[in-house]
Every structure is written in structure tokens, then in C-alpha cells.
Length: 455
Length: 162
Ligand SMILES: Cc1cc2nc3c(=O)[nH]c(=O)nc-3n(C[C@H](O)[C@H](O)[C@H](O)COP(=O)(O)O)c2cc1C
Ligand code: SF4
Ligand code: FES
Image 1 (cartoon, helix red, strand yellow):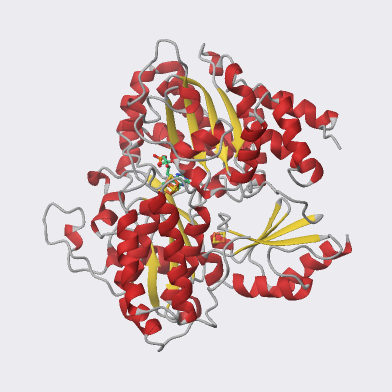
Image 2: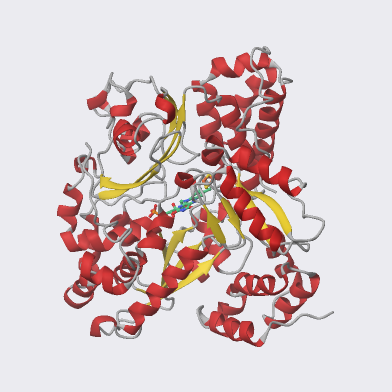
């Protein structure tokens, strides 16, 4: 269901929309934080937060309130809130808009989040390339401090909160939460084995909550509306997937961009109503629903969910384009909602070249700690090279399955799955095109997606 | 040649150190400190590594390990300006390949190389969170989005002039 909203994005595009006076005037800025800190206990805040059914916006869709409830006070150690603004998943371009255009929502969310989990310090981990984002966040922090919303006694409450921006230095893997914590501590961004989970031992060995940047930026809205009412804005809140979120669309559409809508929007609405349809009036070929790690869908696919218990069952037999974009609905389609930014490919797009482009990305970004991931991502990308060069045998094509399957479940972090799942997805959905390359009926020498990996 | 931060950057480093819990602050400041050094001379030379190690009481091997892990830390000198063309699928679907080819042709170098006059290092980048305004390039600290080839020319003209 298409229901555009403007809670998170009301100040987008307004003159000085990123400044405190505009945030206060247009978005009831800092009212939610003031109310939380001055009228509620931290436990109340967590209880309320759970009602929002706010599923983590970083990719895995874990419920935000439940994550907060994992934080238990420690006798000696402080707690930390760490905000993930590494935004590196290919096809994802939403967090950046919040940092640049509505940074106060992030800062206000951090105040509420810190209070809820017993932290006095929040670090916002921003990828280094986003210089404007960092600048806007710092400015928002300064403004909030001057007003007394941050610091020793926010809103007069004796509960100190400080927010700092920390930057990486160019590594996709630092978006993985434990890698990010290592990077925050000044180390190589290599993921840590879990357990311990961040809630037990995170930043500086202390209990830590990691929330995605959009997740935390949505918190003030949820509290302003009341978390239950916020949840009910969603057409699929009964699936515990509540509220509003940012939907991105990129690739072959007429109006690529970031649109705020109630949860429940479908891919068809995102691509045709918001995205303005396919470039050049072409037909839709395929969609990657939420970042390159989420398995691709073909335009003509229908839902196969005969089991009544499946979250996608109500859409059984219908087009996948008509299923609400939700965490559980999309998992039931055999893919994932991921970061909810869709990459659209029009007819004529070469799926083998698209696969090649992405496999180069994963080979480049594997941190190299685990053999199946380090070697597997290399093999996948080398076979993709051979496919495009026309030198891949049928046997090698078949070995793609084994290589990808061997990565699954055999690695320290979910980067492994994030590489294997899209590889298997492309293979399954486009087997015919892959075989055509092997038989020499197609060739990739002029494929425009064939750009060498980052140098 | 030894390396030291300018007084202004040194002040910034002191501010940075105060952001982290005291007993962890020197290690936590490692990446920000390397950024400050690289801002000053363009790359993370051995002297920079030695400086950061001694300034933050860290083993040089740790600092070196950090430098080699992160792709934005330059391990050799680069051009006066760095230009990254995003190469990843969403940008590629909207013409990143043409933008890259155009830059390579105009500058007479391949991605990964620096022009003979040392003015421009041309690089490719993985997704820069700008996919809905593709194709895009990053020049030093600034994004240029929704690019047409004439716009790329304007950017290159400006960089080549100075
Ligand atoms: C390889 C990899 C990259 C990731 N990149 C990001 C990222 O850029 N931003 C993000 O918020 N989460 C990213 N995540 C997910 C985080 O590990 C973590 O689940 C998330 O930040 C939690 O926030 P949320 O619960 O609010 O979604 C990544 C995960 C993996 C495995
Ligand atoms: S799965 Fe890959 S990225 Fe993750 S820790 Fe292992 S080698 Fe590193
Ligand atoms: S693919 Fe180029 S910015 Fe995302």
C-alpha cells in the first residue's frame, strides 16, 4: 500500500533544513527526548520502544526495542551506544540523506537511546567518504549542546549524554557490527567471533548496543506519535513490522531517489509510482530488493507460499512485485529486505555482467580472516571473469554452486552469506544466461557493467 | 625526515583523544590521527607511522597494520587531487563505465595511476552511498552526482587548471 509520509523527511529540502531551529519548528524537534528523559524511567522507555515494532534498518531487521532490552547494567563497566552509519552495502543510499538533511533526528534518537540502555556516550560511526554527513552531524551536536540538550544535564535531567562522530577509512566490512567496534577502538576492522555479543562485550569491552543510523533516527518519531500508533502506520504491523521507513530506488528508473513511506509499500509501487517507471519505457527485468547481498528477483516471479503460516501466504500465486516490502515477507520469498533500497534492472541488462560486477566487489572487500570467504570470494570472481571472457567450462560453472555453498555457515561473520546468497541467487534465476555464456552464444566483451574492481 | 603535525592539527588530535574512555583513548585515536597526518602530506609514509606510534604509545606494527587494512590510507604518494569514479553495479547501470573511460581518455592514464604532472590520481571506488544520483565521482572530499560527460569535462578542466 502506497502511503507517503514525511516524519523523517519533512525538513529535507527546506532552507537550512538541517539546523536546530528548523528541526524544532517543523518536526517538534527534541520534544520526544525531553519527554522521555523528564517523564519516563529508562525501563519505561524500553517497554515503550518495543511497541514500535521498529525493525532494524541496517539489513538484518532485528526489532530495535528487543535489542535495547538485552542491555543489563554492569557493576563496573559503562555502556555504549554505537550508531552504524557505514552505509557501504552496494545499492544503499538512505542513511546519508538523513545525516545530510536531518541530522538532528539522529542526535535526538541518540539521546533517547542512550537513556534507554544506560549509556552516557554514543559514537556515530560514519564512513570516511561522507564528509558532508560528518560535518552536518557535528554541527547538529554543537547546536544541541549549546541548547543544553546534550551534555551534563540534558533538559535539566541529571543524566549526562555525549555524542561523538567517529570515522572509518574505507572498508565495507566495517559495516559489520563487530568489525565496526574494532575499528572504533583503533584496530583493523576484522569481525570478531560471536559470542560474546555486543550487549555483553562490545565497544572497549563494555556492554554496547549497535543500531543502524536510520533505526535511531526513527526513534524520535516513534516516541512523538506514541510507539503503538507509530507501529500501526504500517500496513503489516501485525507481522511485527511497524512504522515508516526510507525506501530507496536506483538503477534503471526514471526517478531514482529516497522516499519515506509507511511500511507496506510494494516493489511495484516503489518502481512505478515513486520511481517513475523504467527508463526508456522498457520492461522490468530484475530487481535486487535491498542491497547487493539480497538475492535478486526476476520481474515475472510469483509467490510460492502455500503454507498458511508463511508471512507471504496472503500473496500466494501473485507477483512478487505486489508483496509488501517487509522483513519477514521478503524472507519468505527466499530473499531479504536488507536495507530496503532496490536496484532496478531493465530488459537488456546482462545478468552475467551484473553478477561479475558484484563478485568483484566481494572479492575486494573480504577481510581475509576466514579461508572459505577469502578464497571463495576470489574463486567466484575469477569464474565470473572467465564467463565474461568466454573461457568458462560447464564444470566450472557448476563449481560456482559448491564454492558458494561452502562459504555459507563456515565463516566468522555474515559477509560470507552476504557473498554466497547473491551468487546463488543469480545462478538460480539466470541459469540459462550463464549457460549461454559457456556455450559461446553470448559474450561480455562489450558489457557496460564490466568495470574492474576498485583501485 | 621526521614528521610532526601542524600546531592546529595537534590541537585537533588533543580534542579527539578526549572523546574516548581514557584508558583506551590512544588506540581509539589511531585512525583519526592517521587521517590528520594524511590530510597534511597526502599519504601515510613510514615517518607518519613512526610519528603516530610514538605520539599514541602504540607499537609501530599496530599502526602499520591499520594503515594496510583500510583502503583510504595511501601507502604511497598520490596526486594533488584524487578522483574516484564509483564502479559498483547501481552506478554501472547508469553509465559509470562511460564516465571512467572518459576520464581515462582525457587524463591519458588508467584507473589507479597518477598524471605525469602529479596533479590527479584517478581511482575507482566501491559504492559510495550515492546510487540514486548515479553516475557519480568523488573529487577529494566532494561528491559530484548525476553526472553527464560534459559535466565530467568541467570538473576535469577545473582540476587541470589548478
Ligand atoms: C558485511 C556486512 C556489512 C554491513 N554493513 C552495514 C552498514 O553499512 N550499515 C548498517 O547499519 N549495518 C550494516 N550491517 C549490519 C550490522 O552488522 C548490524 O546488524 C546493524 O548495524 C544493526 O543495526 P539495526 O539492528 O538497527 O539494523 C552489515 C552487516 C554485514 C555482515
Ligand atoms: S566472513 Fe569474510 S569478511 Fe567476515 S570475517 Fe570471515 S573473511 Fe572476514
Ligand atoms: S553504486 Fe555508486 S554510489 Fe552506490
